[in-house]
Image (cartoon, rainbow, N blue to C red; front, side, top):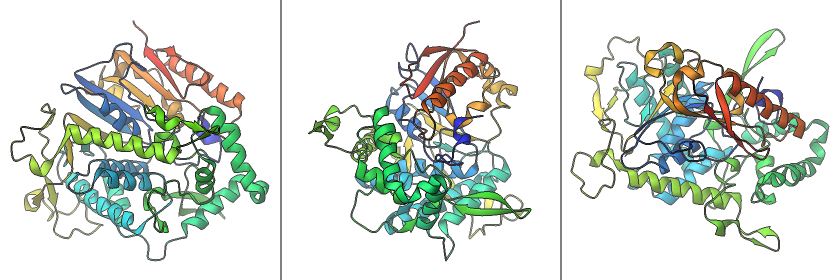
Length: 474
């Protein structure tokens, strides 16, 4: 059983990772950085931080194919939206604004009205794109591929995006939903919650190397769920991408409740806001950090988006030669054809005979086409099935697994990994409800699972956020 399932603070839905972004092909994971055609499998990564970070280390001749497995379609939908926002062209949205919108959607329970409109537009475009894959086996964007999901899973994605696009007219108060979670988590300590928040920050996060997370921003997030406020405005609109459905047993009936069921303790600052290559951002005055985790998150995400813009190009401009483009290699045609149905109702999917691809119009999504990069989403239950398919044999250079999905790993991993593959597993260091003994015990369990799966530890220290293993040689 994974650590995340044993505590209430992280919740039952993982919306972001419990560790900073990593380049999964760097020297930290491989003795020698691999090049050429590269395949990576992400199991339960929850957000695109590792995808974006890995892209920054690619050379012009490298091609990267990322395969993603999540444990629910709601997390897949959110991954798609965050990747969609990442691929918006500079012509449609400036890099600075895109950074702000991305972080709002990524880490805020409530967002600005303007950001909500962007989220609705992204959901509408992705809904159309996924609906088109129901009529053909091809994907409708060169970087985002959902064609390998089952029909019912793509139907579910369309339903989720429709809900985001047209949320309930009288939505539940997100603040009340958040407060109910905090009350449930703290119990009798709720009235002294400020002291609980201070303790978690000072004695757990700061002691674990996250001193850059400021008290003001952390406490505000613990109180309201709003982590990033980079612009003045009203953050009062529910972030639909962070709401999900949880089924409870009530008086012998099963009742579905829509609310916020994710992390309320560790914070979204961990993904982009606790590490930086710019040491000026880590300077202190009077033993206090000058910059905050929000500042560092903004700088890091902006740098990732600048790299995407350098490697990518607008699909609408690809019909004309562009001699100034720095990236000329590609593994795909990198041409997106968006087949749009004429007013398709939400209930119509692949079962409607009159909705034939030949009758649909073609539209090119104005998103960045990132040269040589493709992200494919697989079914939640597909990890056990990959070794049974020949195309996945010895395919992956790196497999990443989150703390919440470690229990799914077994010896069949050897069959789908390359001889020099790396296995990267997220540890429980930032699951704040766990004691030091539980964190250490979880790390020991991870080592045991990796050993049984045919991997040997590369390097591990008790302070490490990730454990890195290398496949054993035959």
